[in-house]
Structure formats: C-alpha cells, structure tokens
Image 1: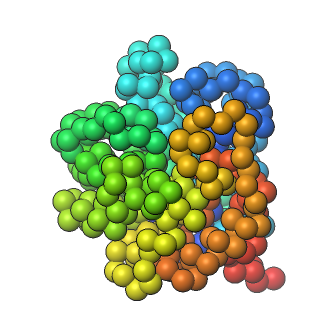
Image 2: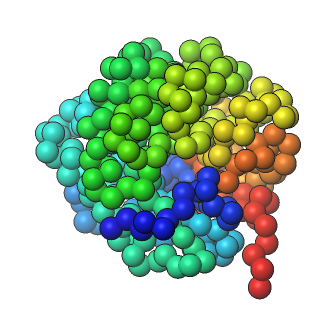
Length: 318
C-alpha cells in the first residue's frame, strides 16, 4: 500500500540514493544470464530473486549508513511490450513480471523502511528500442500509447513514481511524461548522452529538457542523467542556467568509454570509484546544485556508491 504522506526525492530535504548498475552487476559479478539485458526475466526464478533482494539490501545499508533516503527502482527497465515479446512473454505474463517487480520492492520497504530512511518505490521503464542508439523513433503520441500499458501496471501494483531510464530522443520522453500524467503518477525522465555531451540524435541535453518541459507543461517531476560518464557531459553544463535546476538525479557510468566501445567490450570496465566520486561532487558543487538522488549505472556497484556517498553527502549527525 502506498504511504499517502510519502515525499518524493525532489520534495524532500534529505538526500536519496538509489542502486548502481543492476544489469552489469548481475552479469559480471553474479554470473547470471540476462537475455536482452532484461533483469525482470529473473523474477520467475526463486534463487535469482534472492540475489536481487540481497543486491537491493546492500544499497539500503548504504542509505542507512549515510543518513539518506532510498529510491528502490524495480528491475523492470526492459519489461515493456516489444522486449517482452522478444523474450517469449504473453501480455499477461509481462504484466505479472511488472507486478512482481514492484511487489519485491514493497517487500523490501516493509522490512527496512524507518523514519530515518524513507523509501520511495520507483517503477523503472526504459526505451522501446536500444538505449544507446536512436535508430528507431516514435512520435510522442506513439510513445505514449506504447508505454501506457507498462506504466499503468506499475502504478496499479503500487509504484510511487515511474522513472524512464536511458532515453535518447525527446519524442519518447514526451510520450512517457504525458502517459504518466494521464495516469496520475509522477514521472522522472532520465536521458543518456554520448561522449560529446549530446543525445545520440545530436540534440543537446539543454534543448532536450527544455523541449520536453515545453511540450508537456513541465510534467516530469525532475530529470536525471544516466549511463554516461561525467567527463562526457560536464563541458556542456554552464553554471546558473535555469534548465539545470530541473536535473534532480545523477547515475553515471563507471567507465569513460563510449557507448559503442562498451557495446563491443566482453569485460567489465569498473573505472575508478574515487575519481568518479570526485567528479560527481564537482558536478554537484558547480552546476548540478539541485541533484538530490545519487546512484550509478553500467559498471558501478556498492564500491562506487559508497565512494560517491562519502564524497557527496553530508556527514550524518550523531
């Protein structure tokens, strides 16, 4: 059941953390097979569910240690219709997977939440196509129709908000934001960028965020940047520009490699956790002053998030 008094991260005075690179952790550290990089596929395997729960418990421990709230993103980034079809799911089976993903998050919240560590449940969704390439694009209306089914299921299962990760063109972001607004659930839009700091379409992050806001009546609760290294986009951010205040979360990659290089790699590049933490702190101090949610993306794990927390979060009072 939802907590009617719950504050979402952008409404809260305390910082929040979320998890790191779920899929890369499961593949490279846990040795699990993730066809289509689809973590939701594990939800029908009891042993894999235990691994997932242990994974999220680790980040809850970090939030508790640093006096932060916790955003629990359901493992449903790939659990939309086209990806479900590729994996042999019926419509009812895919709905069940989305419900099970949110159900797991509710179980963890019931076990671990405290007044000192509020927990927000986010229904994670992702692009209809490849997260690294914008070769397949929908209109905003097509995107709204496509994503509505998953967003409705996540909402009805008890998500407090939805977060759309690794989006790479504005029409899909607009469609998701409008679909969530129509279903009366807050939406967070997270874009990814290339090494030049622009979306894979070539559009600037500034223009993308301003366009989504203009065409949705500022429907997104806030924006995030994920699946990119800080060195890829820092040079595109100018201190004091109003659009930067709309960015409330940061989930960087561990590696400074390009998306194309990461796609071709057979080994995990975990980068340098201390350096990533320093770069994240510089971003928050200098340009992304409204960021209140910290996590990681590809290649990051508990080591990276602990370093980021140590660098970026205030020391909890005794």
